[in-house]
Image (cartoon, rainbow, N blue to C red; front, side, top):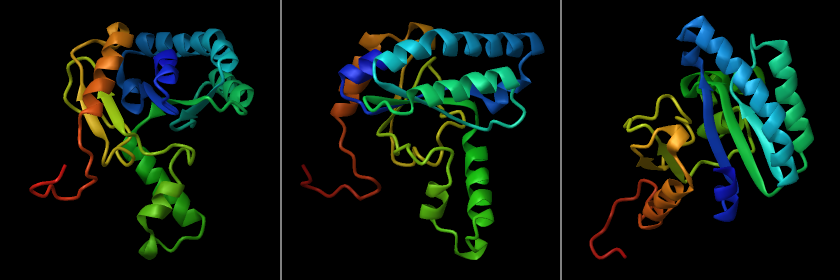
Length: 196
C-alpha cells in the first residue's frame, strides 16, 4: 500500500494497526500482535527509510512495553528527515480518546476552556503534521469508522471494500482511488441545481 500510495502521488497515508479497544482481545492474541508490531518495525522501517518515507505513530503511548516504545521512537527518529510520503501508523489509537486528549492538552497549554475553538483542538491532536484525509477506506465489508480519525475525517469521502485487509491489494486500492476521483466534494456546501 505504501508503494502504491507513493506511485499515485499521495503525500500522507494512515494505517490503523491497533486500536485501544484491541486490548480487550485475549491476552495471548494481544501479546502476539505486540510481537508482530516489533518485528514489522524492525524489518519494514529500513526499507521505508530507503524509499523516503517518514514514519509517525499516532495514539497513546501510555503503558506501552518499553522495548516496543523504543522501537517506535527509533523508527520515527530514523525517518524524520524523509519527505516523499508520511506514513502515520495508528497504534493504541482511538478517535474519541484523541479528541479528549487534545482538549486536555489545549487546556493545560493555557487555553481558556470556555473559548476552546476547533483550531485549538486541531493543533493539539496526536500529530500536527497530519492533514485531514481526503479518503477513508474501510476493509472487511464493515460499514463503520470504528473510532478511526473521527475529528479529521469529518469531510472525508468514505470507501467500503469487501476485501479483508490482508487481501486488500494494489488493484483494490486503485479501484478505491478511481471511485474517489469521480466524486464531487462539497465540504458541507449545499448542492445547487446546475452545479457542475
